[in-house]
Length: 214
Image (cartoon, rainbow, N blue to C red):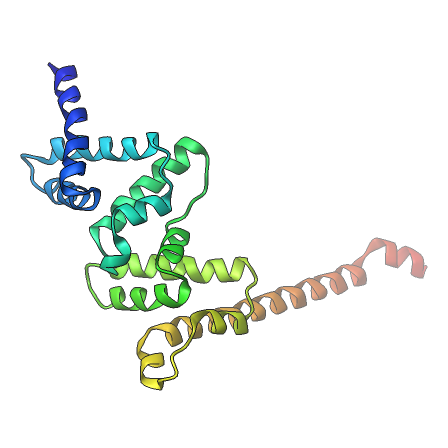
């Protein structure tokens, strides 16, 4: 009976997606998982949907398009969680490293379009955690790639209208990047200074130095 149920579920996900669309089915399954009576079935169908995408060689960008995330323009959408779940499976099964940040950045047409969406999500209590994680990931990416501040400024494409530039969230994340750069520079300088002091102390008390002096 269990195998028969699984076969029925396997045959259901295809027709459901064909009739209602991958994005609608994905959102519906996320909602149904919150219903105790339907959670198990919804989880099985969702797993099957993700598996089907994987078997068909879908990339993170393909799923971004299938879920119509660009049309939604909503970082806190349940569909984003579906995309993130799929990326976890892809990266595990295929030993790839496709990140949610990279897929969203490319899907929304660049960092200049993504950052305002992060700012918008950041004022919603239900979305703030996701927004903060993605913003932190973006700052880390800039730092790891050694992206100059001027390059970040150009990438963000600030609006000519000052009000728009200030309210878009771009100034906020640029300021965060600037502060982190200063903190990192100060830390590196203090570490270098400490190493120099330790070297001087070692040279002063080195047995080799005393022997040479004798």
